Length: 102
Image 1 (tube, one colour):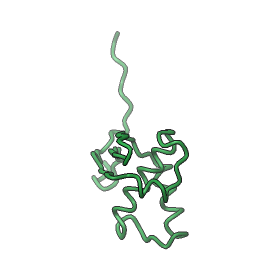
Image 2: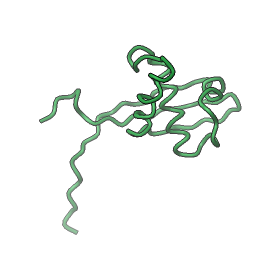
Image 3: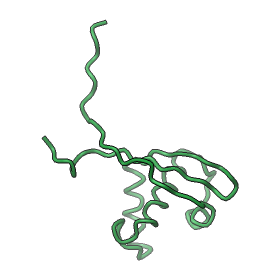
Image 4: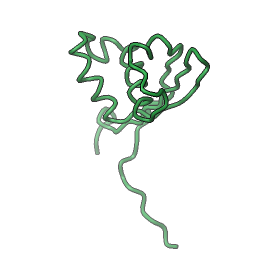
């Protein structure tokens, strides 16, 4: 059995924008990879070193992927996102459900 640190995580983030838009996104692996690729280019440091920036970036990446912010660049998003809050980082059970008998 994998230990708790190795468990798959579902990250859900709530965002409230300056214009009143309020949405929740589920952060997926591509969103987190996007941060890891961009952070060295921008000299941001790791997620542990810059947790608020990481949280904002992965929310932006997920919102961009889900087409919720209409192509807004990250620099604009970080100015316009008044609140970015992780709602959950719950472990995900990777075992597929077994279909019932009926």
